[in-house]
Length: 283
Ligand code: G3D
Ligand code: MG
Image (cartoon, rainbow, N blue to C red):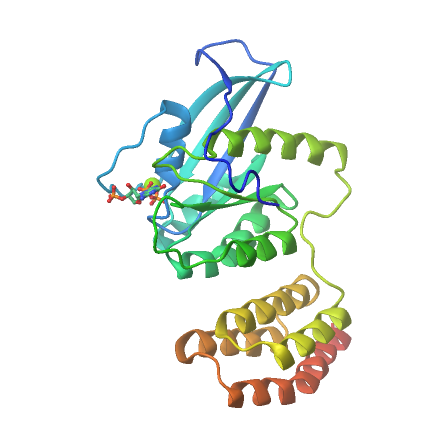
């Protein structure tokens, strides 16, 4: 779901003073690679401004914003967790008790989108089925590398909405935080529905086969492999098949897509199915 694709005007929100009494407090976590704009999004939403001059976030910090939404006083505590991988152990601590994960990537840096899956796994490890939203930032820039369709497809697979924003222009920033409230509310009403959509494994393999036969680019192949890998990972996290797919994903990311890799992967599918099943039986 792209929330307001063509509308450059953001919605208005009624803000309250930081010390206002509140009906509910929500802990939100900004996730994503370094420099995608997590701090900028928090600053834009909570302070209404955009500051340039890159400063790495060390450890974690949080923003507070009080709002009137849906007839209630809400307080958002927005954690800005350092994206740099060496702070991984710190990050897990901050995920606890989260109401929503905000998965941010930079629409002009493909790698930051490719890495979202790792952020999903890390976040879900600690928080289970906490809702998530996927955010493509920096849409004010012209040199876009991630197509909206691709981002939307990824979001669909993790059962999250997708929204495009610019911390710089302010586009969709209020809309992002208003839709987070809707997500949290929806989640509470449907707590039994799994938040991550892994396909049944047979279906995942069938779809992978179809996709590998028809696509002609590295990005599509990588996404198809990742979805299949994720579906297996949910059931059998340490299977040979998951490891082998990870190697293939690395290979494609480094060497691109060609006819030989298409053939090799299609020939691999029976082995992937077999190895996944072996591990499954042993367990
Ligand atoms: P992080 O907290 O995810 O690590 P930051 O990222 O918020 O620190 O942002 C990293 C850089 O991206 C900064 O660059 C920041 O100004 C820029 N940035 C963040 N959001 C946007 C956006 O929406 N549009 C554009 N054009 N740039 C953005 P600088 O150069 O300021 O250090
Ligand atoms: Mg930061």
